[in-house]
Length: 413
Ligand SMILES: Cc1cc2nc3c(=O)[nH]c(=O)nc-3n(C[C@H](O)[C@H](O)[C@H](O)COP(=O)(O)OP(=O)(O)OC[C@H]3O[C@@H](n4cnc5c(N)ncnc54)[C@H](O)[C@@H]3O)c2cc1C
Image 1 (cartoon, rainbow, N blue to C red):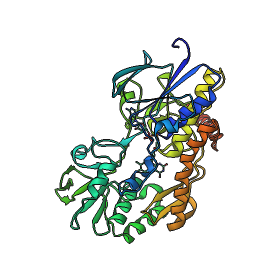
Image 2: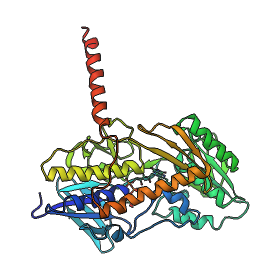
Image 3: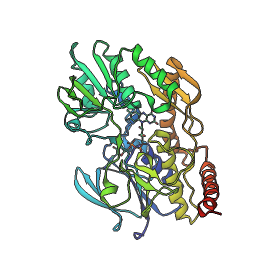
């Protein structure tokens, strides 16, 4: 431990990091703690609305100091560039220069960005639904505003982000040819029923689909396919999957292929019990009984749980394992349409399914509510709760039963 107060450093001020910092501030008020939140930008970003910002819609961008107002959390604007787990320090690059911040506990909440390295030319020529960088969502907004009638836009990625971006761009620029390209099928990630709803919407809106077409490279004038074809596009938007910053990997901590930090059921790095990872940046090695997907709900729950577990350690109490149930999901299909469905309890779509205005209202309500949870947590720390807290234990019992059923067979008994 460092001398004096226990230093808790939260890296990343997205949904997971802000939730963790606010909850820690409230729950450790009577303990001698010093909580610092580090974020590259000085404002909060509603990442799940970035596809709306590319067509000029105003989204909330509250200052980080406003998000933390009235709490004891100290805010440092800067980019984390290195972690030293042995020395328990993080290097931060700020406008004033480089700083080294010591910690007793680290909450790794750096989120994710669109992956750019796998396909040549993406980094240089494609626009991304990212909050920062040269080809960010706001740079795309500026570029789309200069489109000419004969120009075409190509969105690469058949997942939710690509579909949401294509629909929003087509609705704003109806004269522009918008193509949605996917290395596999488009919208197949939630099963056939939900996929059919999404494909109907894309067809109604006049978005051309190019399925099973992996991209070989991206240039300023379009994309090349491995079979030699070239698809012209004045603007290419890359939505090809998420990747976590590589700080943990460079620090020698165990990560997966997306650079997510591998964590135990209590959200601690499997190699270092003073580092907790949350949100998009974490990947649990044990099955919590519900699939863990990069999502807002998981970000809020893991942020809250890491705060609870660090508080438990400081109070010498038992930590709790990650265990939760999902409620639902809604995918925007332009400003006038969406598909929303119940996913309780294990992130599989079950009825009822909503479309059009009802689904748009549902989605907007959930987007508002998930943001509101942060506001409420600031005033009433510990308020945020979630269901499904017994699912991890049930899943572990199931795994044990299966293991004991298999082992006599293996030993030939
Ligand atoms: C277009 C789009 C639509 C989406 N739609 C949905 C949806 O409908 N439903 C859903 O559940 N999820 C959706 N998601 C995913 C959701 O936004 C993420 O899962 C969620 O934001 C993860 O929260 P987080 O706090 O882990 O990370 P983030 O929200 O990414 O926050 C991470 C923070 O860390 C900061 N940061 C990064 N690197 C550094 C560094 N080196 N130093 C300092 N700060 C750093 C970032 O600036 C950011 O503020 C969508 C994502 C996108 C891009």
